[in-house]
Length: 134
Image (cartoon, rainbow, N blue to C red; front, side):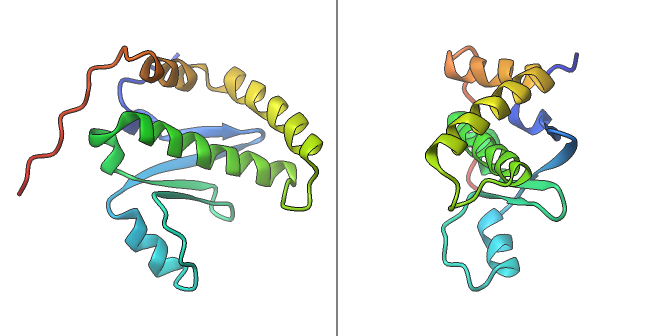
């Protein structure tokens, strides 16, 4: 069982039969805009389905663990929805049923990640030190 002590320790996530690489990158918004110039969405992370990668701004590793955890889970859910074929045309019942099954599969496949997320929620982790001004 691997130990996760910080968000940046999460490098890979299981998405059913796929493995997604998690990349904590500087200036995620800038990279996203370069890749998708037509998209005006404000992003802190995104999921690349073709490359099986989740990109998240490294800003959250040190400044806001809860927000970083939210973004990680958000993008991981996107990956699962893509795998399951859920989209805007799916019914609420399809989303609910398949999302419940997906989350249980995620918990079984990645218990260490969920334990780390629970620790964040319960305030068991030391608050990260904010980056010093340059």
